[in-house]
Image (cartoon, rainbow, N blue to C red):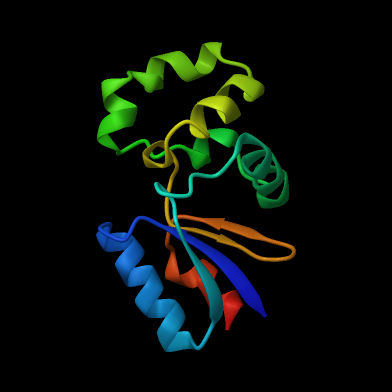
Length: 117
């Protein structure tokens, strides 16, 4: 099984996740989330596959999220507007992301990632 791994290489959590993938022998395709930002269409597909609320796809601890004061603005935005916003800058997207054929994992929680082995 090969999965798509979206990361920001300078992110310490992404580094831990990548090391975990390598240590677990998981075959993955590496994608820089800022240089190759997810499109709105990709994000829609991943969101549908994830079963998570759309808010979970936002990097709520990121500087850009805070600078844009998105905590207050997201409630007034449609899903389409939120997908379009996420697609403007990879730094708005929660990372790392793992996309498989039938699942999407957002963030690095080792217990959730165990299913990749």
